[in-house]
Amino acid sequence: MHEYSIVQALLTQCEDIAAKNDANAVNSIEIKIGVMSGVESHLLKTAFDTFKEGTVCGRSQLIIHEQPLKILCNECGFESEVPVYKCSKCESLNVKVVDGEDMYLMRLEME
Image 1 (tube, rainbow, N blue to C red):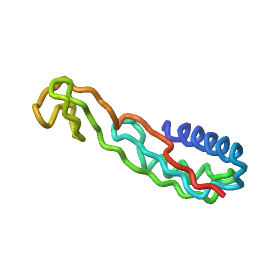
Image 2 (image 1 turned 30 degrees about the vertical axis):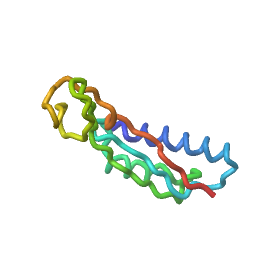
Image 3 (image 1 turned 180 degrees about the vertical axis):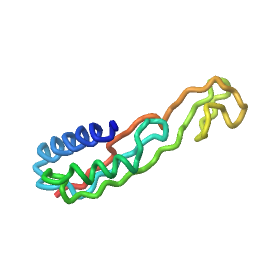
Image 4 (image 1 turned 120 degrees about the vertical axis):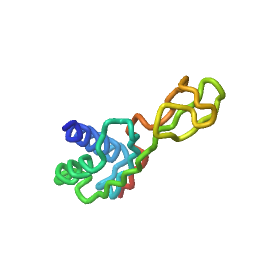
């Protein structure tokens, strides 16, 4: 389960950001997870709740936004959110993924 290592990296990143901003605690962490990222949101939340104790994020809330797959059609230029790798306008399979495959730290609320 790679969610544990992702949480460890996220907590380290939050601790670094908190230290650079002279913050004593992180109250909330907002992330975006693409549906094609390979990260299971519920497992990530469980791992976060397990490992946050004793860190600057000990009392923080994890807010997860799931990002659908977004593609750009190389044939007609139409950008859309779709469940498959096919343009919803012209039905071309010649598409480029523009969002939905990554995980991003979007925002921290610190004190």
